[in-house]
Amino acid sequence: MKKSKPQAGELSDADIKALATELLKSPVFLRKIVPSAAAVLLIGYFGTVKYIAEKAVQQVETKASNLTERAWMDVSNQIVLKLQETNVQSTMQEVAGKQATNLMMHSIAPALSNLQKSVDTAQSALAEQNEKISSMASKTEALGLVITNTHAALEEFKLVLRSNLAELQMKTQDRTITPEQRETFIRSLTNAPKGPVMMGSRGVSRESSQYFEQVKTMIQASGYTVPLAVNYRDNLVWLNGNDSIAFFVQSISNAPPYVPWLGRAFQFAGISVTFSTNVSREFFGIGPAPKSNEVLILVTEKP
Image (cartoon, rainbow, N blue to C red; front, top):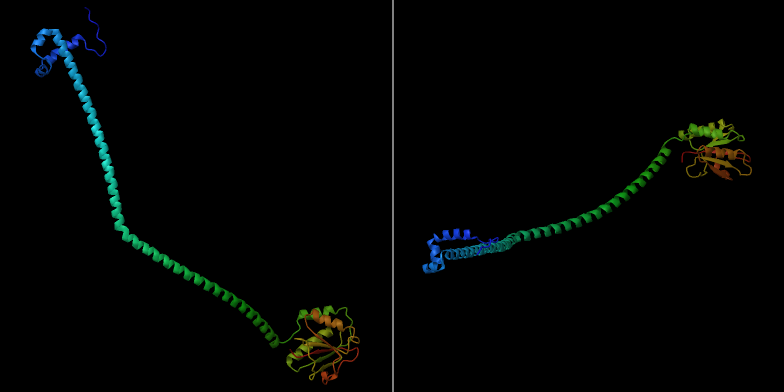
């Protein structure tokens, strides 16, 4: 009977013989595998060899399976041990972390309490300081208002002082007709009607006499004649404000026609004058009073 060709993964007869020959050399194998010498004789050489080879293959497969299973068990156990070690380490780390945190919190708790007290004290001091600053700001604002009012009062006082000083200077300085005033006065009377003008002075001081001469010569330079110049030392006529020049006529209706021109000329030159009519004779003292169609210009003492 012709033997079939072995399939892939099967042992050939030659392989079985070679394997059996090697296994038969081992006493241990023969004790465990071969049941008895009688069985060898009955089965025959080739049957025995085939039997031995099959037993050997089974033993090899069993050992390989056991080794593989043991290897898997070893690997599984190592994996389990690694996982257990990891869990243990993680647990230990967590416990240690908690313990360390508790110890740290316990150790720094007094410091934290002191720090909180310091913060509270600082906040209280800051609030008190802010209150003081606010109070100081209010006082500063009030002081600023007082300073502003004081400054305004000082400015007003300075204006009063300047006014008083100017008035004092006017009283202490000599009255004078400036060149500009003289030129303006004469120019404004260029086309005015001309005629005689009575003039008088009141006061015997040097300043009064000097000012009287300036006014008289300015009128004469404007084209008017001065037939009479008398000192009215007993004159009692009151003039307006700070005026020191007065016009006297009997009435507006019989006054010379150039009187309004003369009055405006003084105003153009910046010199204030007083106009009087129907003045009683006794107010002129020893000097003559103006008659109809006459005008008297009186230059008094410094106001």
